Length: 60
Image 1 (cartoon, rainbow, N blue to C red):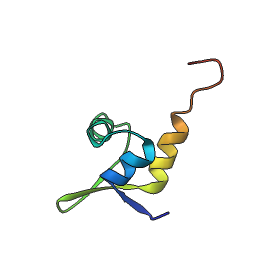
Image 2: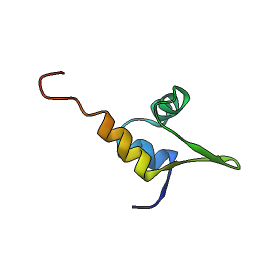
Image 3: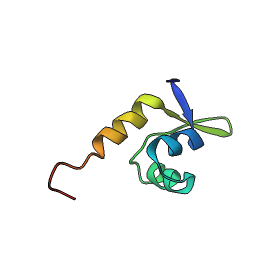
Image 4: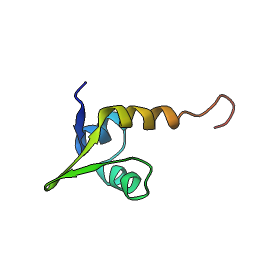
């Protein structure tokens, strides 16, 4: 896995749309980095977000 993901690749990895991804970034739930005009996300932080989002058994 690459160190950095584009917003489209990160949204794909999480399974949400790009607009939802931007909302997660805006609400501080997912860190993102601006390099000039592009926004990138660290692959490891996307994976950590996925791990944090896990629902424990019996808590739908």
